[in-house]
Image (cartoon, rainbow, N blue to C red):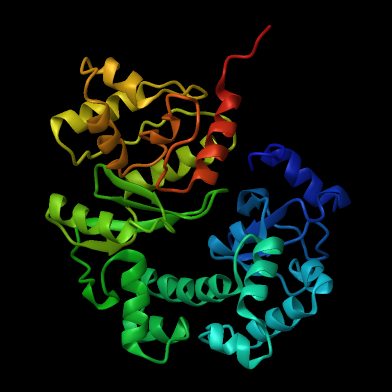
Length: 353
């Protein structure tokens, strides 16, 4: 379920009926084909267990899905602006191409105009859209056991160093560093608010973060140091568990997270994290409130630092901490996500009679 949309069963019924009311309001992504479509798509409808519903095109693409070639879900925006139609066509013809601002200028476009147009229609810039399509192909190849050179070519990188640089920027280590003997494995989990990366060992979840968080490479480096282990690609049972719990959470079914956690922090930091987990879904607290809860009312700044050091988003709900004046405070996943999460969790408040 998406935060402003009905439950999955209602969306699936609308998909089967090709309900026109959802045109431009929701998209279905098919996990078995990695393609996303409009509800009106004439193609054979997928099984319900293979459907994930998204509100925005950006969310579909960030989760690694490609636009359907039968229903053309990007077409309405393309019809509205010729530059969008031209660039989408160019991207479709050469998805492996490395785009930059000079490429746009060479086609006669002002990069800032292109940026605004794509952001307005899709919630993502054209250059981000092109980069995601390329890099995700390489990650899929590596996860399936492919060679680095194969992943590089699938991602459309002519230069091995360019692929390593892009890969390292995302995951904090070069693709050739994987040995297959890593004790920690990383994999991504698609959510309505964008892809998340989960890192676990055979018993516990060590990290859960949104993949576009700028601090992610630094967090992964710290995790390798604290866990004294390198990180490979794949998933253990804790990642399967948290993926199922996240699905229930975003569907408005349960805010309970029972996946075993491995916490890398001082005794004080872990006390703060436990206090965060004690905040009921649908409620918010301030840093000062948390300091009082752990019996250290003067440690407000230390509480804020511990909150920022959290590496297991949503499960340790640092998004439930707001300013003393009721305003949203900083959130590593982005304030827009924090607002969405707070809105979602209102579903978990007790219903008044």
